[in-house]
Image (cartoon, rainbow, N blue to C red; front, side, top):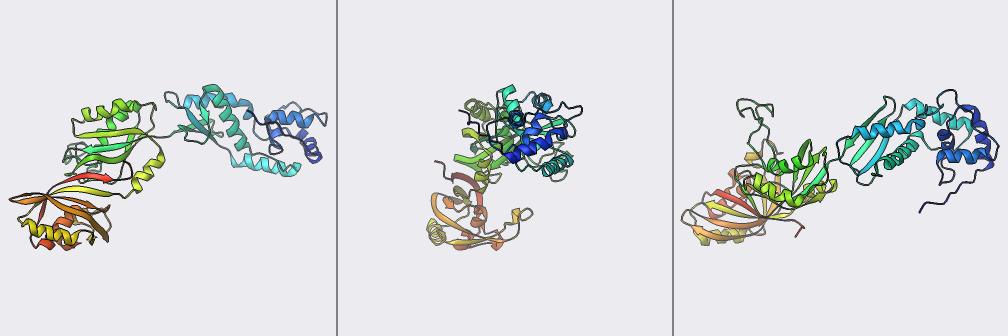
Length: 411
């Protein structure tokens, strides 16, 4: 249902229209001077409604429009440029913008002041709206600011459309079953990704990563330029991520295809990764999901294999002391080169011995987000206090570490 036409030109507006007749306006720009005077009309229709009461017509223009330079008359040219700029890309929703020469917009406002009209709509605003309507009519796509697939920017001074293809986002949970791969791509520290003898020309510290194994099938399916991986925290390279898996969002940059069959791609990730990585719950996501994933700080549960000959009764006594108690963790030695050196307060939520062996024992613990579990067990030269090794009075070593669950709000 369209809005009813509301347009009642006042005597003041008609006087301004009379003064504007000789200024060399096109029908679009003439009507636009009164754009905020009522609604439900196009600017050329508004021009006609203004001129009828004063029995006038717009003079034929011998030169381009004094304001827009006939840009509105060439709208189909801009529609064609917009469509061509995204040839080969799938898109269903869009929004429009334009870049005008400041002198043009200033000249327009100066004319409004001279003519005494206070109802003008800027050329930029009108062009964006009319261009969007013309693109909708041409393509069947939906224009508006709500979750666009592409943003079109018309650079009117140079006659070019610059499209920005918005990323595609896929959300899910991953399990990492290999203790030799990091979560994300690590450029070689020596050559910083360029390729050197140290990295065998690959530009990488590790041959692959969760990001690459998860991203490769999705990258190919979407025809995207690259991926960006956003995880809800990360596990150590030598730790497995088990249980329900760790939440993540994969960002696909400049995708050519947006309709992805995620029911097929989930199993394909497990197959193509050789069983090193599995994913569950793949679904399409939004940019806001990246913020949610990055800012979340859920508790986590771990299985820790501890090497050290300690009577189990002594371990249990130490766990009773440690559980629920705040610990002070100075930035661990192993990450001090990339993390600020400060002391963080953390807490062991729960802990219990699940297995014992001649050379050690296995713990299941639950901790606050950001707890360095290895350092809590081993002490890190006193940088974590209190620590389990200190509580039992015997040096301890972490033999293996598995993340059993990330206790986020999902499930």
